[in-house]
Length: 415
Image (cartoon, one colour):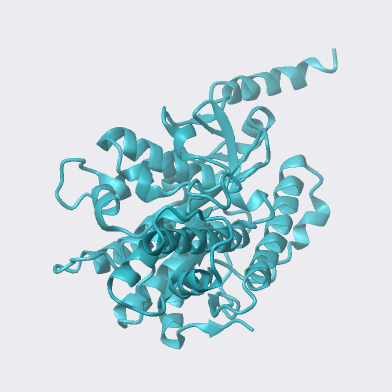
């Protein structure tokens, strides 16, 4: 008898939670063709970075250059609402005319939200300044009027069923509007990305295998309008789906997690894949030269002279890293008095992601010991989000402004 009052109280809450149970799903029939593990075809044309690198090497050769110029690569980290810093920093650089002409953009989690905007920041043939508007729109996107613009909270009862704190369905709607509210509009951002933007790779993890995937949003955007928008939105949502924080995300019949779950190694994996793609470009270019000079020649054991000339033309990256957050995680004095599953699970995930993001920056250097690496972080701000918030509007608005001001300092050199 003593359990009946508790049951009477709990049952309506559980039933309400069940009404919203289930994953967040976005329909993208071709997702499997776009989303391939980054390890696939590491040294061949199947490597996702091979095509843009080969294109750069070919252009350099056609221009008669004897050495391929360094090309800028932008790496955008995760960080949730701290992404407001990166949005402000990019806008501040653009306002000062100091934004590098990025040849490749990569992003994970909140960095995936920024990637398509940054990929258009140096759009070829932009006489009307749409790139400046892109970064202004990005900064405005990170200044929501309320938290529910991006996330719908379930509450404690919802966590029992969902195993998560909130849904990212509202963020999906905002992504679609940002990509292209009107698919017939001439300035549709999705179409511009397909036609003239830089390759923009976003990272996420396949739940079943634990493998890291990094599709190119530019390639996805080149599909049919409405399906392309859904598939780009799916990739961006997959990259933002932090376990426990947000409900499970599915597309293409599979569940996906935030890229930071994979030790936030997207940055390191990208640089490793680029190195492998660079070698593939060298091998392919040397092979083509030998066949031109020696018709019918095989490419096994390519002569050193051919290899040296090919190596001189292979793209050499210069990395720019925006750390959307701080290197040290904020303390949580209240956690000692909170024994519930939700606050403790969220706290553990945040600690793990923070450490992974720190490790990933160091991994870029380890993978590229001789490369130039520049970075910027929000380490020196005293701004903090409200306790328990997922998206704190006041904090995000202030952080955008901090990022804009930080742009006056430019980039730091990574040792």
